[in-house]
Structures are given as structure tokens and as C-alpha cells.
Length: 288
Image (cartoon, rainbow, N blue to C red; front, top):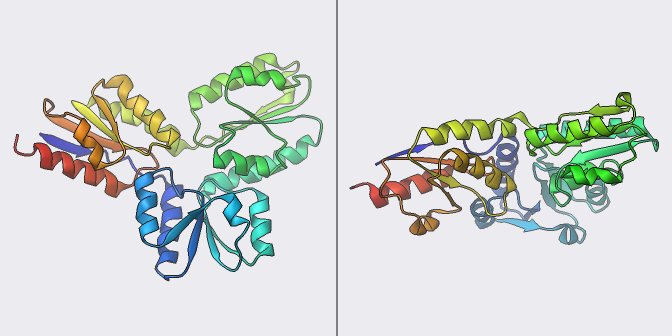
């Protein structure tokens, strides 16, 4: 049996940067917090917690003072920075540069709209990136996921469309077309494709990778929407695709009949975890 790890799988730049910042701070051995899971991968979060990082939610953050807190790649709304300034909290800025640029662009376009139009964000309402983006404009944006969500919009006024960086580009284009068709005056509509290329290109690549092997073991976090989307790309071209979150979950997967196994993962999957999964497969079936 041959086990191959996909060379393009694993952390995107934004996640790599945030984790590198966390590891640097943890070396000091002082209390260190992360506002929310640093990445949607349970195994990586657990690894960093063992090194001393404490994951906190927004309610806990409001009770902190005189400490260091990491802002993860998803970014945060302005009130997070305001609270930190008032309570002597040093924020370690881990927001992905792509997200920072998007936040700036949304603020600019919102000021152009004033109160005369609608700013739309294509994304998931409860996703931390979307919470951070909407916070840039006082939570006045309308969050949409499907064409049906557009019914609350006044199409006779200016509309500006943005997207959460990790959303499907195909679905974004469908939504954009629907908006263009509904506008009373096309000149009042502006589309800003803010989907991250690193994320958008991962799906087509994984389809090619999945075709090149007999079976796929996709490694991803249970809470990661990116993992679910990318796994479905694998499954769409290779029916012998299996989703695991840790090496231990391989116990319920039978790979004995396959000669070439491909191990891959999401933008939130650490390299070390894919390697552990690959080693576990090799150990289990290596002599067959």
C-alpha cells in the first residue's frame, strides 16, 4: 500500500500566521488567551491549550484586563479593540491580511452609501469573520446565504455586495447574477468579489488529487465548514472518500482493499495531523 499526503493541503497563510504568533507568545510562559478557537480544528486547538493557551469567548473577554489576547485570522469588530484599550489588554493582531483589506473596503463602501442603500455580505451570520465584517459598519449590513434572503432588499436603491472570504465562488456568482437581474437600475449595483483565492482554488485541486488515488482520507475538524465543503469535493469524484478528525477515527475505516491512499485536508488542518494519519495508515496496513 502507498500512502500519499497532498502537498497543497493544510493551513492557509492567515492561519499559519496566527498560529506562529500564538507559539511565539506561549514561549514566554505568561497567561495568554485566544478570543475564540484559533482555527476550526479540535486537535490543533488542544495542542496549543497544552502549551498554555486559554481559549475564551466574548463574555469572558469582557471581564479581562492587564493581559495579552490573540485576535485570530477571522478578525474582530471595532468594539473588541475599544474594550482592549479601556482595560489595558494587549491585542496580538492575527487577523488575516486578506480579511483586514476586506474590512477596510467595507468601511469605505459603507461611507459611500450613507443611508441611501444596502450593503450585503454573502456569508454565515454566526461566523466570526462575518461578525467582524458587519461590526465595521455598525452591524447595518444584511447577511445573506441564498437568493431567498434577498427578498428583504429595496432594489430601487444602491446595493453593494461583498462575500465572506471562505464562501463558494460559484454560489457567490449565482447570487450576484440574481441581484443584477432584480435591480431596477443596474448602475446602482456594485459587486466586490472578496473570496480568498487560496481557499477557492483548493476545491478544484482536491478533485484532481482525489482522482489520482484509489481512496481518500480527508482530515478535518468537525466544526469546520471549510472541511465539509472540501471533503464533498473529494467525494464528488472519488466515492471511496473518508472523513476523519484524528488518527483514532481510522479504526472505523477499512482501507485494506486499496493500493494507493491519498491523505488531504482543509485550510484549517495542520500538517502534523495529516502526517499522523498517514503514519497510522502505514502502520496498520504496511505489511499487507
